[in-house]
Length: 154
Ligand code: FES
Image (cartoon, rainbow, N blue to C red; front, side, top):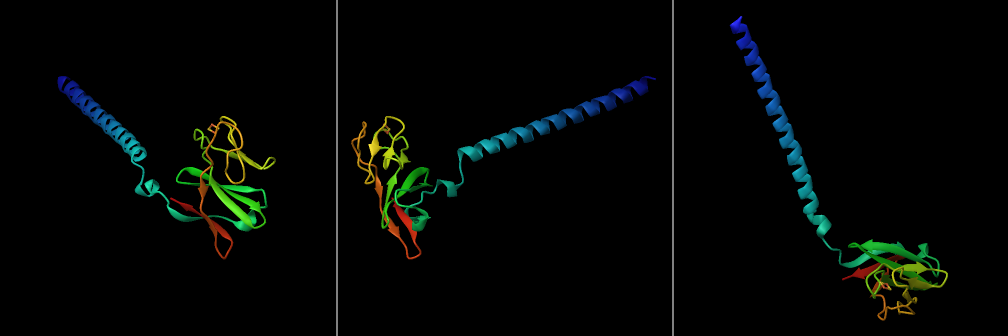
């Protein structure tokens, strides 16, 4: 009878050790996965950290009507491509020169308008009201033979 109890206790102890070990391994893998994911967020892949520079393609010139804009984003910064007239285009950084809010194009008044402090900029990027005194940053622009508009990132 005593031998039987010893055997049951031995088996019970064995399963307790096994379950305990399994839980510890599960915790280790879970914590390890969490740490690995955290490291992935903290250290983004090298490709994501590279900044685009030079001429970058944006939109086709015929996709815009006079007075219309397209917005593109490079390196986390938004830019506008503006068709000023049938054969005139311009590009500006959408970052307001006053305090770096993002301006929006208002086609009704043909002005870039800043939602933060109500600065306005004309189609040449010049300030036309509000606290901003500097123009929007104009980007160099070119159009290739196929009609694709490129802007130059520095
Ligand atoms: S940030 Fe644009 S007006 Fe102040």
